[in-house]
Image: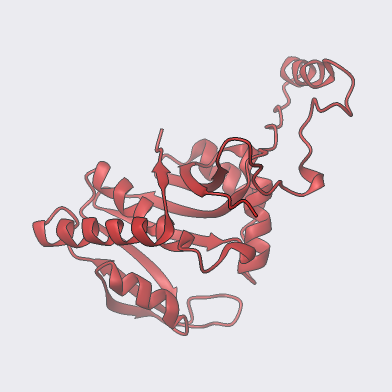
Length: 228
């Protein structure tokens, strides 16, 4: 039986990714963000950066396809040129053209706000069927790399007080507990633990981060970070 080599690309989220991201939201959170929140942040929030992890396979192997409802406009089921014609009508009469849905299999995503001094993780999730493969850790690596690239001093986040597995991962990457936000989560009023890294440009943190990146690569395989 032929084995398939899987690798991952981390890239910026676009509007066509939102339907798959919402699937992951539904699997991961009781208190979901609305689709409009992602659209607003992607199009208008200069502080926000959203990244997705896309599953890629070797040439000749197909990655897991998104469900059928993600069939893009302009598929063989649509009359030729219909999508372009409708888009032109929307532009002429002031409507907003809907982004074509991505066909790339998205297995996780993360949202981060780049404030003047820090990169603050606002959401992070992995598709249920893909958990346990190091994808959540890859998203964390991508955020830290993005923060370093953009000259932020630290990375911060909130995490549920009961989520010990996530806290252990964050502690591995140099985050420490710096406080609590009482009753932070609206679904069950659970407290949030506030965590932050040491300065990420310091020599000790850089050594830790690079070592953890090497270990993740050896354990979980190849990946590509694309922030453009």
